[in-house]
Length: 108
Image 1 (cartoon, rainbow, N blue to C red):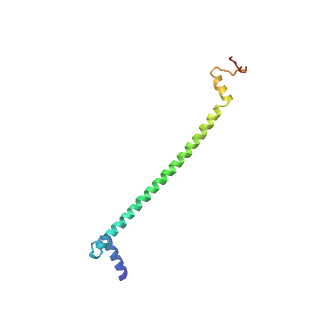
Image 2 (cartoon, rainbow, N blue to C red):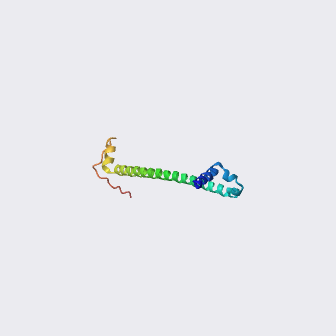
Image 3 (cartoon, rainbow, N blue to C red):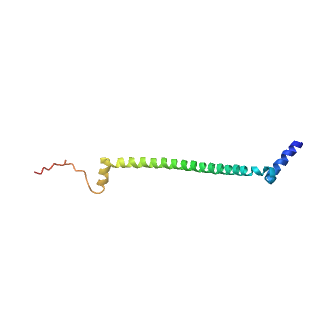
């Protein structure tokens, strides 16, 4: 029971700050501050890495969406270059396909 009481007592002295106020332990204060700064830096780096991962996932989804849009647009444009589609478009405007083949003019 005495050892348990000692552990509780030493833990409570650390929490209250008596550990730092002790003259024998003051030489460890810079090291403890360094450790605390390293822990804070580690937390900041972890949050930044998580944010970058979310950003990367969002950008990958956007690239997939843009690729799908590109493929759809390319397919639509390829279909618009077909002769039958062009004839249908110009027929609505009153133009018809000529049944007479073109002739070559020779200028001499």
